[in-house]
Image 1 (cartoon, each protein chain N blue to C red):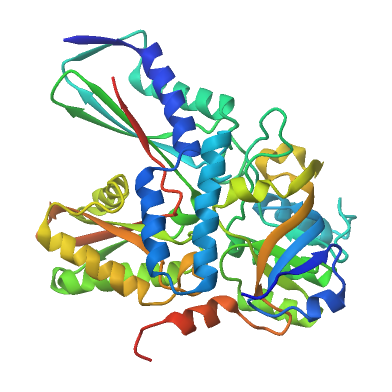
Image 2 (cartoon, each protein chain N blue to C red):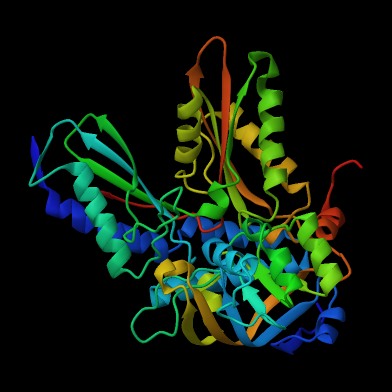
Length: 279
Length: 187
């Protein structure tokens, strides 16, 4: 049994919010470099270079990579041998986000859906909590921008649609998204589960390091095929034409109902932000 | 790539008319930020025949909501937001004399038609290059709707703000042409 005081959680989450927004992951920077080797469009090349320079400025000056510092999406894996003291886990994580967004000069982008009035502190957050084995608390903070989130979707396909139907849906969503989600993008795909789990799988797939191979060789081949087909559409960086639209396609799969074939696409912009800590 | 065209706002009809899709432009002078909520208010005022807080004649609106400025900085990070959310409002602002819009993503046929009719241009700025774009902002002042927080209208004074012409005043569309040029799809 391990005891963690919630004040430690608040501090950790606050730091993660800032780091995620200032410091673009090495995996994304490496993907920019790989794209620069294959991009044919002069405009596309110029954009990829701008994005590298932007990431450098954000990291050095500790300013947000993108002004849309997102909804704070948090994944918490709580070991069931952990004892928490001093308050509720969910409240501590939310307080960490509140402090991180205030003290880190991050934009508050949460509002009432009808009146559109800003809540002022970037809460409520989106929290996904999971109980796991062990005596550690693992927290991942993944700020998610609105532009790319808006281009996402779920389809309840027929089992007879099969893998080909899934591929068609993913390519169609990317094609429709066009320049809107700030390409180059990462395409998260969730297959199986049910309506809401497919979407969650798609979101979770975005946490996988860019450039990493899917552990399932069959899925890895599908991912490569989808990257190639999406990029063959010619949309390119920022949708202005070119070879690089998708930096990667990530697939997560789970069994589903015998009557269903759920598939979800969650698109992430090139500012693919996520940082984690283990307490 | 050809050298960028340097322009200073307010833009004249002549400035706008000579721009073509794919032209790289460096904008100087004043830009006004406005997103969904500010557009809704501006159009509501116009519908009621009331005066607007900014004169739109020849001006350029930047679809953007910056992050808060850190102490000692003019502004926070400031990249473009998705323009299609402003499609419902833009034709009215264009008819009122707006000469340029900066954002990212495709516009509706109605907006493009209004741009052709009234001579207006739609520029794309690099989405997500927000820390880089902030370097071009020399002054920033909230001029309307402070209560909207990040969605307030901010008057920006910019130097060489880099954009590319997406839709020109002749109905051209760089997204369509660029994609066509690099597509490997069987046509």
